[in-house]
Amino acid sequence: MIFLLFTLQFLEPEDSNNLYLMDLMLATPEEQFVIGFDSLLSGLYTNQGCLDLMNWYIELLIKSDFYLSRRVCLRYRYRKLGDYDRQIDEHRFEPTLNLKRIRFHLMISPKYYKGGDEIGAGFSLGDYLNYLEIFLTIPDFDRNFSLRDTPDTLPRYLYKRFPIRLTFEIRKRWQQGYAKLLLDRTMTSFQVWSGHETRKEDRWNLLLYLTSWHGRFNLELNTRYDERNRRDFLLPTRELRPDTLNWLEIQPGIGFRFSPKLSVYFRYRIDSKRHLRNQFDYHRSGNSQYLDLHYRMSDQYLWHFGYQGEYLKSGELKIVNNHRFIIGLEYIFPKGRFVLWEGIEADRPFRILRFHNHTYLSLLVSF
Image (cartoon, rainbow, N blue to C red; front, side):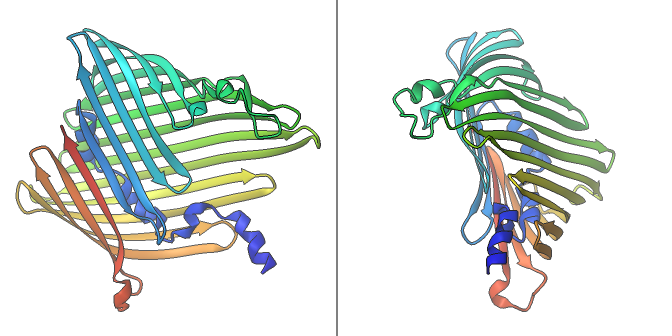
C-alpha cells in the first residue's frame, strides 16, 4: 500500500482517462470548423465531451466585433478550456482604432481574482483569414496592489519583476489551403514572499495548424507545444524546488476524396509529456490513430464512420492499449454547423453495458 501511494506521485491528472489521446483527436477541430470560426466577425465555437466519470472536456470560444463608428471598434474575446490541468477561463476587451487595414488595440482581461488581471496593447492587420497580430501585455499587473493588506504570515508573493507576455499570430488563406501559427511567450518573472521563499517563472506556447489540398489529396498538421518553468527557492533551508513541464503534441493527417460524396481521412497523434517536480520525474509517451470515413448524404447531412486506436505508456505503472469505433452525424445549417460523435466499445464488444464509449459534440454558430 505504501508503495502504491508513493507511485501515485508519478501520475498526472489525465492518467485517470484510458482514452485520453483518442478523446483529444475528437476534440481537435476539423478544417471546416477552424476556417469557419476564424473567418467570422462574431460567432461561437465549442467542443464538449466526456473525459471520465468525473470530468467533461469543454472548449468554448466566443468573439464579436462591435463597431461604434467606421474607425472605432470594441472587440470582445472569451475563451474557456476545461481539460484536467489545462484550465482557462478568460475574457478580454479590446478598444480598437481602425486605420484602413491596420488596427491598433488596447487590451484588458479582468479575472475573478484581481491579482490575475492582464493589460496591454497591440496591433493587427489584414482580414481574419489573412491576418497578422502582435500583442505585448503584462499579466498579473494588479497582483501587488491586491495583496497590499495581506500579512506576511500568509502566502504573499509580490512581484519584484513583473512578467512580460508577447503573443504573435499569423494566418494565411490560399485557394487550396489554410495555415496559422501562434507563438505565446511569457518572459521570466521574479516573486518574493518575504522571509519564506522566492519564485521565478516563465513559459511559452506554440500552436501550428496547416491544411492543404492537392487535387483529391489533403495534407493536415496540428501541433502544440507547452513549456512551463518554475523554480522555488526556500530561504530558511536554501532548498531549490523545480517544477518544469514540457508537453509536445503532434497530429499529422492525410485525406483522399473519392467523389463529392465520399472521402476518407487518416490522422496520427503523437503525445510526449515530461513533468519534473521536486525529486519526481514523470514521463508519458504514446500515440493514437483515427481512420475517418465521410459520407455526404446531402448538402446538409454528413455521416462519419471511424475507428480509433491508442497506445500509451504513462508514469511508472500505466500502459494502455485501447480501441473503439466512431459514428458521427454532421448537420450544416445557414448560420453554422454541428457534429455529434459517439464512441462504441471495440475491445469488449459483447459487454452491453460498456457499448457506449464517450460522446463528443462540436458546434459552430455565427451571429
